[in-house]
Amino acid sequence: MGVLYDAKQETNYPNKYAEKQMPIVGQRCRVIACTILGLLLICLSWTTGWESRHVHDYFWSKKSDSSSHILATTIQKQLVPLEAHVMSKCPDAKECLEMMVIPTMEQVWDKVNFTLSFIGTPTANDGVDCMHGPGECMGNIIELCAAYLYPKPIIYLGFTMCLSREYQEIPQQRLVEDCALEHGIDFNKIHKCAIRENGGFAIGMLRDSVRRTAQVGVTKSCTVRLNNEIYCIRDGHKWKDCPHGAAVDDLVTAVEDLYQSLQS
Image 1 (cartoon, rainbow, N blue to C red):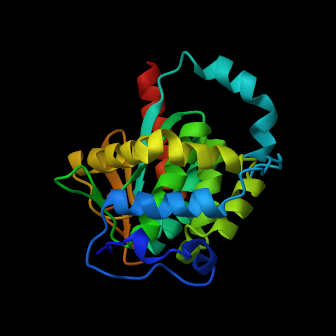
Image 2: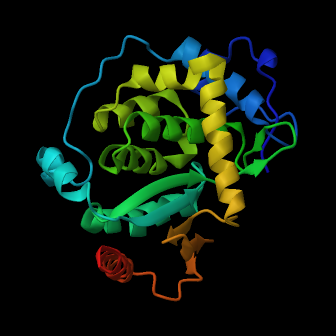
Image 3: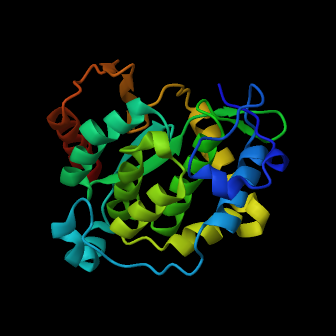
């Protein structure tokens, strides 16, 4: 389960953060506490003068020069809903993105409406419990801000995969900066998103995402849903509940079949 962090107990938190994880002082993490933690990280540690540098996209770089054509040719098309429900510090989420979601998106990115959603436990006081602690709550917020600011999966999904490769380090500044630079994301914009409305905007996105996941009955990271139905689950480093197969080719075929049926 998560942990409850009291930011007041760490007055020199930003300097100590790069060397160790957050202290554990309780059993659960509420999103407000996690946000206070995150805001200290952002406001005191993040470099607000950072400027975005554009580099080759981590994935689909060969298609990046045709974005206007993509928009023109897909705007009239019915896209297939594809969704991945994850926890930012979950090893199964990293494997799921790496082994299924990213390779599939490389092939059918123009046929799906992709959504990245997060798993947590909504609380009675409009908070969220994060299984892997307050760092995961902040990691979820960072990834949600990236998706909000850069809604094309070609950008935000690559950024999320970059973070997931070192999921143990989420949300440390070095990792976020490196992945932002690699994927042409403006670090300062992520900062502004996280502190917008005194953190209320980012909190709301996380709360809405977690509630959405709960409403559709998803509890395990990573769960892949296709056309609003569970397609496959990565849990305990194994694929489970994948009646149509866990191979990338299986999911690609399923997407293409659904896409064709939607166009008829």
